[in-house]
Image (cartoon, rainbow, N blue to C red; front, side):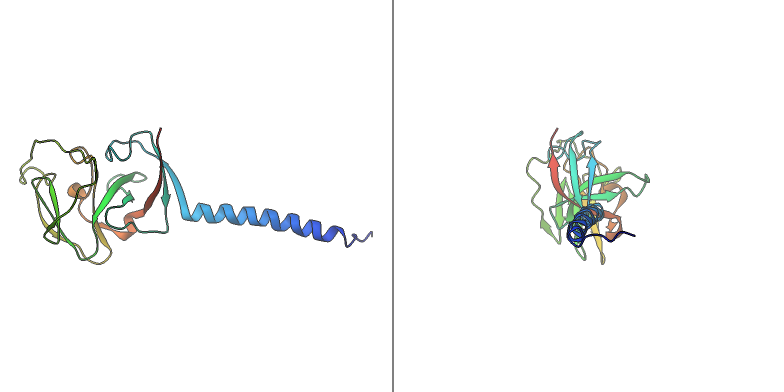
Length: 172
């Protein structure tokens, strides 16, 4: 049997290490980030139907940041909404204004709201009684306030429902 030349071993080792690094890098990327094509206008004007977003799956979004959330109703559907309240906060909506712990929350720039108000007995879209959040619970509202499916409809969300925070938006 012919023995390999010692000079060939470092090259073979470098090739193996190179491809191992690429495989490990792809594995880490697959675990930490996810791409998603947006199929809704619920986050207008921040994110439009047809945009592409990248989600950081390791970070839970802070107040004001946009989260990717597992739909509590439709399996395999992802909802994009802005976190407006987090653990142990109390959130309330009065005439389309969001109050967190009794203080009016500043809306994101460009938030879309119509002048039409729905009474609380019909919907919590525009007026909602106070909701106290517990540990690892969040309240999320979409930027397209009047035309979105968010915590005003399905209630508070647990940290387990949050896929991650939006870290990049590619406009179409």
